[in-house]
Image 1 (cartoon, rainbow, N blue to C red):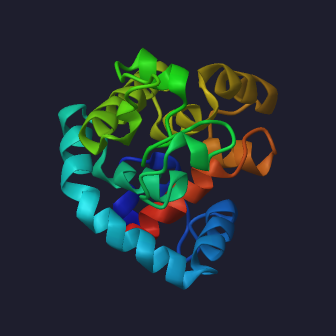
Image 2 (spheres, rainbow, N blue to C red):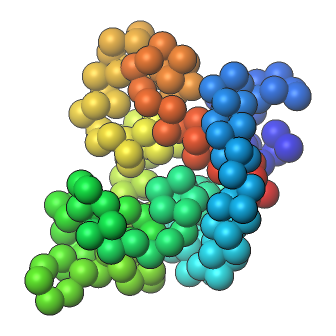
Length: 185
């Protein structure tokens, strides 16, 4: 099971059978609603070829195909379904979508186009990895933005994303994505 996280060194070093307490907690939350999880995994299977193609094209680990499980349950949600206006499988905010070349206006919302949004998400993840040199921190930056992650690192005194979750410097998002990686395997 730890081989799944070969590209995520913080988890690869964790002792078995528990990967990390915050990941264990996130895994329990995911598994608390098995019918929802099963439906999301079915939607993931349908979208996976498009998502993996985009991730591979931009050098992002295949395991990050699990990120939309956390974001949307692989549902292509319109902005009207989200109080903050995020949309699509990848739950892009309008300004981030535009920064990555997606059109978002009154006539079209390319966040709902799986091919275009997956390419944009893969580029965003690759950019965050380039900025932080760590996939866990890239995942956190995908969710919070790079400035918030830099602040968390400074305030927490560590670059370990799971330690930052334990310290309360980051929300449990990274742990949730790691748990989603486990269940999608």
